[in-house]
Image (cartoon, rainbow, N blue to C red; front, side, top):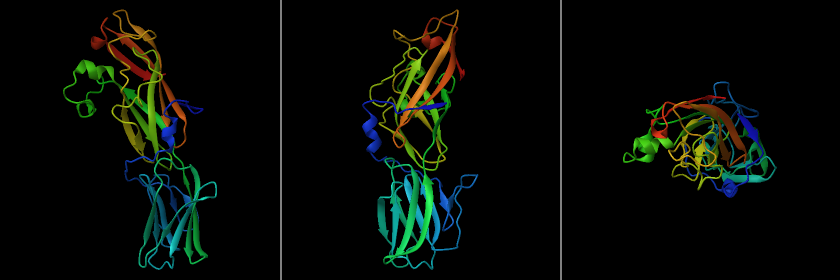
Length: 279
């Protein structure tokens, strides 16, 4: 998998729109004065100091305070030094949260606990996503995926055979959103600038830190109609290589991964045997 410079498309403006989906996952932690993420990616707490836990859960940064904390305000400072937001702490409250969405600036954030104008405690935590492509597959080779749920039970196998799923993982410490998906190279219907996002019935898909999700295509990359630059099936067999690419909102990066592909067994795509492997 490679990372390149940002992909220039009409969807780049989507990076500034906050993601709507929330999912719970433990991310970056602190011990009341430092930051870090355990090797197993799970959250830990430390009862020492007013700040007992700072963690990214879905698209929200959660700050937990000790029962003894004498704090009336918590500020979140962005990597550029500007204030991201402030939260008043009600008497007896032990938690405040900041909705960071998927339009935040990745990097090191500071959490500052205040009593009046005085800083009581401060902690830093890295919030940065890392999106990677893990797998790509077709209905004919992966019937256990929720194809009917995604595309509808009324769709024929031939229709579903033309689409593909792409499994992606966020191994970073902050959420991100995929805003564009496309296929190029030796597929029947390579479309480098698909209509919409290229993701079926979605403008974007939020990927929380530490989670893996499947994207389902909407550009019919393995359709029965062969494009001018596409590669199809034949009884003698065809082989080549194609690339899956996606664009992310937070980092604005283009993430790509190449695969080898073999088409054998038929002159018709709907009856074709398609073998996909990492290039």
